[in-house]
Length: 130
Image (tube, rainbow, N blue to C red; front, side, top):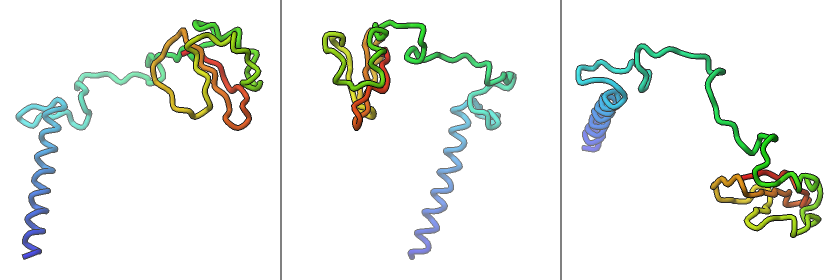
């Protein structure tokens, strides 16, 4: 009895796998007649391959030294020093002062200063906008 049940379960599972493969092909560009995408998901047959090195990308404003949208240049002299040395009057309202590895919200604000410091040495690691 147990072998019959196991064999029936395996047959049902194999049937589901076949059906799911057909539905994925239909979803990713195939048609009812089985003309699928041939393994290239969502790519038209006449698509041209371009050099991946020439693909456009978005730069991270935090890594661009040319832009100082938050006024961090006034605080850059404190990088490498104790975080406690920074006068509170120089840290604008809404700034974030946090330990490396601390959990932060993921909202990106160009006008906000982020002061990151090492939790052990309390040295300022980096000062960024965002």
